[in-house]
Length: 439
Image (cartoon, rainbow, N blue to C red; front, side, top):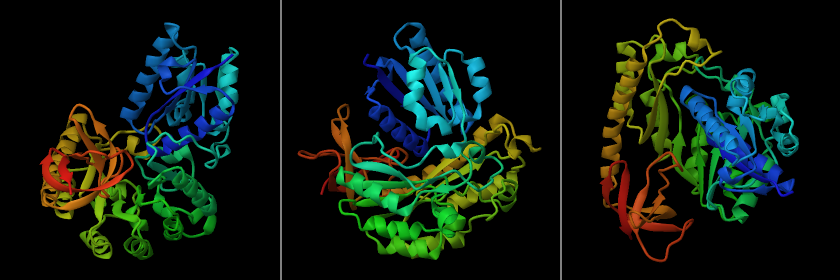
């Protein structure tokens, strides 16, 4: 019997890498993969469980497919990922529509688990997380011209608000030779932009080589024919070394873009967060900008952490205003079960947390508006992503924009195609995005 399998993957690019490895295992087992999970016999839901909004999305997605199962449109539901790993005991009780709840360590057995649920079995399996290899064949789920390269998983940082070490376990870096081989294979298949990810990309190699080896990995990746852009996400500021900045400045393929989540600007709040490096200073920001001319900096900050007073919040707003991060995301603190921050005194109301988040984003909008306006008249290189049939124009990204999280450039052109690099002249700004014409 031909069994159709569909997958819904939620959450971050690291979770997406788990999905790609599982899809390759499913495909090897000769099941039929379908892009529309609602048309599958078996649906694998790869969940995120990092913060409250992600948990709600996971539950809503499971319930959506539970309804389809009730209506007879699909037959079986398999739930995996961070949400399943974290809430294993509650899920089967609260969501009996699920046929399998499995932990991260069971992802390697996904093809066999699908066979078990098809045969009518109910599966609960939670082996050690280290059973799940980070290497192997993958089914690329991003557009053909860009891909994520996961250099490691897990985290040794013990930030007071974060459940990732509980869910994913300690840092596990991947072998450098295997990473280079994987990147070369991706380039041979048409990938032009490679986006490096991990929980803390800058710590790559510490666990297996005894020291951070990200600069050396980058130099090897830059030697791969076909790659045009190499991008870094999730670089903790305390681990951004002079050597890393030298490599970024020297290598043309490494886009001048770095994601450095600072979380806050107040030394007191960061101490409470157990962010041991302390506050990121303007001196650090200036040093990075001086070492890599033209670099675009992205960061993430959090409002409403327990004990954040008006003075600490003002300090954060002033730093956002002064540092002028070209890209910034802000999240309201979410108390996560099992983390020290969830039990701290000084918890703020949701209204206060949300209001402060909105104020930070108002500050950031002014920064972004000034940055975008400064680009009018510039000619920039754009990686073409797709055609917007409603706006009747093409759109893409500059080197200053990471996929799915940053700005777009919209332009009209004939004879271009997704994955192509073109030069455009910026003519206008539209909200957060840019308008351009072919140069």
